[in-house]
Image (cartoon, rainbow, N blue to C red):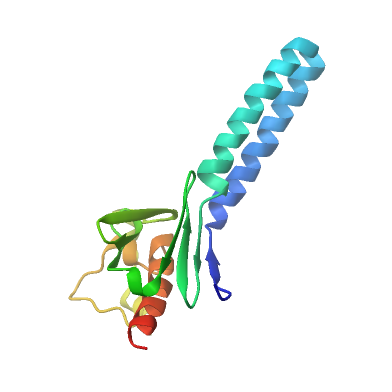
Length: 162
């Protein structure tokens, strides 16, 4: 794969690091105040909770390259050549349909309909987004799914037109 753009929401990475620090402080406090046995139990529990936050918030990302798209979710990694892809949607998250499978990208959630109300026509200028009066919240350029889907659709279109 040639080099590509990595999409990972900064808010989820920052939230994960805040949780890691919070968990570490709780574990250290428990080890100091409660002794070794209770501290060992809190280390195991803290490690499990930190692993959960890593999988759900820190690990998911999307790499959009010239030849393929890579979607890394908490428990799986998917690689697709652009010519294999049938559609790119943004209903709840950015999703890629290949054959009978639809892969949802955890790293690109759609925004809420409330955030969609704050969008002005000027926000969409120059993006070549074809709309018939409305735009889906997941396609908004302010949302993680909208940004990732826009870049993915550009690469997908370029690959199909070669």
